[in-house]
Length: 221
Image 1: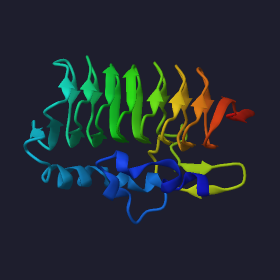
Image 2 (image 1 turned 90 degrees about the horizontal axis):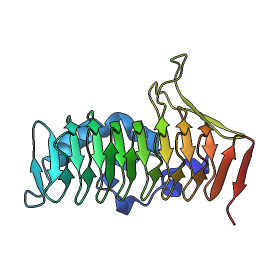
Image 3 (image 1 turned 60 degrees about the horizontal axis):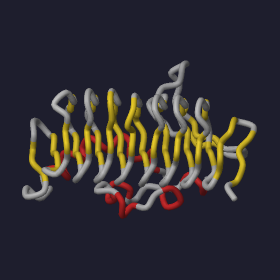
Image 4 (image 1 turned 45 degrees about the vertical axis):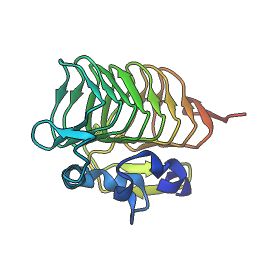
Protein backbone atom coordinates (compact mmCIF):
# COMPACT_ATOMS: atom_id res chain seq x y z
CA UNK A 1 0.00 0.00 0.00
CA UNK A 2 2.35 2.66 -1.32
CA UNK A 3 0.29 5.70 -0.34
CA UNK A 4 0.53 4.74 3.33
CA UNK A 5 4.29 4.40 3.48
CA UNK A 6 6.19 6.88 5.60
CA UNK A 7 8.12 8.45 2.73
CA UNK A 8 4.89 9.21 0.89
CA UNK A 9 3.24 10.93 3.85
CA UNK A 10 5.90 12.84 5.78
CA UNK A 11 8.90 15.11 5.54
CA UNK A 12 10.93 13.62 8.37
CA UNK A 13 13.13 16.70 8.58
CA UNK A 14 10.15 18.39 10.23
CA UNK A 15 10.12 16.38 13.45
CA UNK A 16 12.48 15.82 16.34
CA UNK A 17 11.33 12.19 16.21
CA UNK A 18 12.73 11.43 12.74
CA UNK A 19 14.94 8.59 13.98
CA UNK A 20 11.88 6.81 15.40
CA UNK A 21 10.66 6.17 11.86
CA UNK A 22 13.79 4.36 10.74
CA UNK A 23 13.52 0.65 10.00
CA UNK A 24 9.73 0.70 9.75
CA UNK A 25 7.50 0.89 6.68
CA UNK A 26 4.23 2.36 7.92
CA UNK A 27 3.89 5.22 10.41
CA UNK A 28 1.50 3.45 12.77
CA UNK A 29 4.28 0.98 13.57
CA UNK A 30 5.88 3.61 15.81
CA UNK A 31 2.82 4.17 18.01
CA UNK A 32 3.84 1.56 20.65
CA UNK A 33 7.36 3.01 20.74
CA UNK A 34 6.59 6.66 21.50
CA UNK A 35 6.80 6.45 25.29
CA UNK A 36 10.25 4.90 25.51
CA UNK A 37 11.55 7.10 22.70
CA UNK A 38 10.56 10.28 24.55
CA UNK A 39 12.33 9.22 27.73
CA UNK A 40 15.51 8.34 25.83
CA UNK A 41 15.49 11.47 23.67
CA UNK A 42 14.47 13.82 26.46
CA UNK A 43 17.56 13.06 28.47
CA UNK A 44 19.73 14.15 25.54
CA UNK A 45 18.04 17.48 24.79
CA UNK A 46 20.14 20.64 25.05
CA UNK A 47 19.55 22.29 28.45
CA UNK A 48 19.96 25.74 26.93
CA UNK A 49 16.92 25.05 24.71
CA UNK A 50 14.75 22.74 26.84
CA UNK A 51 14.02 22.59 30.53
CA UNK A 52 12.72 19.60 32.43
CA UNK A 53 9.43 20.27 34.21
CA UNK A 54 8.29 17.29 36.20
CA UNK A 55 8.88 13.62 35.53
CA UNK A 56 9.84 12.97 31.91
CA UNK A 57 8.48 16.30 30.68
CA UNK A 58 10.74 18.49 28.56
CA UNK A 59 9.48 21.87 27.40
CA UNK A 60 11.33 24.32 25.19
CA UNK A 61 12.11 27.55 27.00
CA UNK A 62 10.56 29.51 24.13
CA UNK A 63 7.24 27.63 24.33
CA UNK A 64 4.22 29.42 25.74
CA UNK A 65 2.28 27.30 28.23
CA UNK A 66 -1.03 28.48 29.68
CA UNK A 67 -1.19 28.10 33.47
CA UNK A 68 -4.45 26.16 33.09
CA UNK A 69 -2.94 23.52 30.78
CA UNK A 70 -2.46 19.99 32.16
CA UNK A 71 0.65 18.16 30.98
CA UNK A 72 1.56 14.60 31.97
CA UNK A 73 4.73 12.85 30.90
CA UNK A 74 6.39 11.50 29.00
CA UNK A 75 6.19 14.56 26.77
CA UNK A 76 8.37 16.83 24.67
CA UNK A 77 7.09 20.26 23.64
CA UNK A 78 9.05 22.10 20.98
CA UNK A 79 10.29 25.62 20.44
CA UNK A 80 7.84 28.50 19.97
CA UNK A 81 4.89 26.15 20.49
CA UNK A 82 1.77 27.45 22.23
CA UNK A 83 -0.22 25.28 24.66
CA UNK A 84 -3.43 27.17 25.33
CA UNK A 85 -6.06 27.37 28.06
CA UNK A 86 -7.21 24.01 29.44
CA UNK A 87 -5.27 21.89 26.97
CA UNK A 88 -4.96 18.33 28.29
CA UNK A 89 -1.80 16.46 27.32
CA UNK A 90 -2.13 12.96 28.76
CA UNK A 91 1.35 11.67 28.04
CA UNK A 92 3.37 9.98 25.31
CA UNK A 93 3.22 13.19 23.29
CA UNK A 94 5.86 14.66 21.00
CA UNK A 95 4.81 18.15 19.97
CA UNK A 96 6.99 19.88 17.42
CA UNK A 97 8.13 23.46 16.93
CA UNK A 98 5.67 26.29 16.20
CA UNK A 99 2.63 24.15 17.02
CA UNK A 100 -0.67 25.21 18.55
CA UNK A 101 -2.50 22.96 21.02
CA UNK A 102 -5.62 24.86 21.81
CA UNK A 103 -8.53 25.39 24.11
CA UNK A 104 -9.72 22.10 25.64
CA UNK A 105 -7.76 19.99 23.15
CA UNK A 106 -6.72 16.54 24.41
CA UNK A 107 -3.66 14.66 23.20
CA UNK A 108 -2.52 11.11 24.00
CA UNK A 109 0.19 8.96 22.41
CA UNK A 110 0.81 11.25 19.47
CA UNK A 111 3.47 12.81 17.31
CA UNK A 112 2.79 16.30 16.01
CA UNK A 113 5.29 17.41 13.41
CA UNK A 114 6.38 21.06 13.27
CA UNK A 115 3.75 23.73 12.59
CA UNK A 116 0.77 21.49 13.38
CA UNK A 117 -2.37 23.18 14.68
CA UNK A 118 -5.03 21.48 16.81
CA UNK A 119 -6.44 24.71 18.17
CA UNK A 120 -10.05 24.20 19.28
CA UNK A 121 -11.79 21.31 21.08
CA UNK A 122 -9.89 18.52 19.35
CA UNK A 123 -9.19 14.98 20.52
CA UNK A 124 -6.08 13.42 19.00
CA UNK A 125 -5.13 9.98 20.26
CA UNK A 126 -2.78 7.29 18.93
CA UNK A 127 -2.17 9.40 15.85
CA UNK A 128 0.55 11.13 13.83
CA UNK A 129 -0.01 14.56 12.32
CA UNK A 130 2.36 15.67 9.57
CA UNK A 131 4.03 19.02 8.94
CA UNK A 132 1.62 21.96 8.74
CA UNK A 133 -1.46 19.77 9.16
CA UNK A 134 -4.48 21.40 10.76
CA UNK A 135 -7.60 20.06 12.44
CA UNK A 136 -10.60 22.36 12.42
CA UNK A 137 -12.63 23.11 15.53
CA UNK A 138 -14.28 20.04 17.03
CA UNK A 139 -12.65 17.52 14.71
CA UNK A 140 -11.38 14.37 16.41
CA UNK A 141 -9.57 11.10 15.87
CA UNK A 142 -11.57 8.09 17.02
CA UNK A 143 -8.96 5.60 18.13
CA UNK A 144 -10.87 2.45 19.21
CA UNK A 145 -13.39 0.51 17.13
CA UNK A 146 -16.84 0.07 18.64
CA UNK A 147 -16.43 -3.71 18.69
CA UNK A 148 -12.92 -3.37 20.20
CA UNK A 149 -11.34 -5.51 17.48
CA UNK A 150 -7.90 -4.77 16.03
CA UNK A 151 -7.67 -1.97 13.49
CA UNK A 152 -7.24 -2.74 9.79
CA UNK A 153 -6.13 -0.10 7.27
CA UNK A 154 -8.06 -0.41 4.01
CA UNK A 155 -8.05 1.26 0.63
CA UNK A 156 -10.12 0.27 -2.39
CA UNK A 157 -8.13 -2.87 -3.17
CA UNK A 158 -5.88 -3.75 -0.21
CA UNK A 159 -5.97 -4.13 3.55
CA UNK A 160 -3.26 -4.23 6.21
CA UNK A 161 -3.73 -5.76 9.64
CA UNK A 162 -2.02 -3.41 12.09
CA UNK A 163 -2.24 -5.58 15.22
CA UNK A 164 -3.27 -2.45 17.13
CA UNK A 165 -6.39 -2.03 19.22
CA UNK A 166 -5.79 1.71 19.53
CA UNK A 167 -5.07 3.56 16.30
CA UNK A 168 -6.52 6.94 15.42
CA UNK A 169 -5.39 8.60 12.20
CA UNK A 170 -2.27 9.24 10.16
CA UNK A 171 -2.38 12.73 8.61
CA UNK A 172 0.18 13.49 5.94
CA UNK A 173 1.90 16.84 5.54
CA UNK A 174 -0.33 19.86 4.80
CA UNK A 175 -3.62 18.06 5.50
CA UNK A 176 -6.65 20.21 6.33
CA UNK A 177 -9.48 18.61 8.32
CA UNK A 178 -12.76 20.50 8.39
CA UNK A 179 -14.65 21.40 11.53
CA UNK A 180 -16.54 18.71 13.46
CA UNK A 181 -15.19 15.85 11.37
CA UNK A 182 -14.59 12.36 12.79
CA UNK A 183 -11.58 10.38 11.59
CA UNK A 184 -12.42 6.75 12.32
CA UNK A 185 -9.85 4.21 13.55
CA UNK A 186 -7.29 3.39 10.88
CA UNK A 187 -7.83 6.49 8.77
CA UNK A 188 -4.87 7.56 6.61
CA UNK A 189 -5.03 10.90 4.80
CA UNK A 190 -2.47 11.58 2.09
CA UNK A 191 -0.46 14.78 2.05
CA UNK A 192 -1.97 18.02 0.73
CA UNK A 193 -5.54 16.71 1.05
CA UNK A 194 -8.61 18.50 2.40
CA UNK A 195 -11.50 17.00 4.35
CA UNK A 196 -14.88 18.75 4.17
CA UNK A 197 -16.44 19.87 7.47
CA UNK A 198 -18.81 17.41 9.17
CA UNK A 199 -17.19 14.45 7.45
CA UNK A 200 -17.09 10.88 8.76
CA UNK A 201 -13.85 9.51 7.31
CA UNK A 202 -12.54 5.95 7.23
CA UNK A 203 -9.95 4.14 5.16
CA UNK A 204 -7.32 5.76 2.97
CA UNK A 205 -7.75 9.18 1.35
CA UNK A 206 -5.25 9.68 -1.50
CA UNK A 207 -2.82 12.60 -1.50
CA UNK A 208 -3.81 15.85 -3.24
CA UNK A 209 -7.51 15.07 -2.81
CA UNK A 210 -10.66 16.79 -1.63
CA UNK A 211 -12.82 14.50 0.50
CA UNK A 212 -16.48 15.48 0.16
CA UNK A 213 -17.97 12.17 1.30
CA UNK A 214 -17.10 8.47 1.13
CA UNK A 215 -18.34 8.26 -2.45
CA UNK A 216 -16.97 11.59 -3.66
CA UNK A 217 -13.25 12.08 -3.37
CA UNK A 218 -11.89 14.31 -6.12
CA UNK A 219 -8.36 15.16 -7.18
CA UNK A 220 -7.23 18.72 -6.61
CA UNK A 221 -6.68 20.76 -9.75
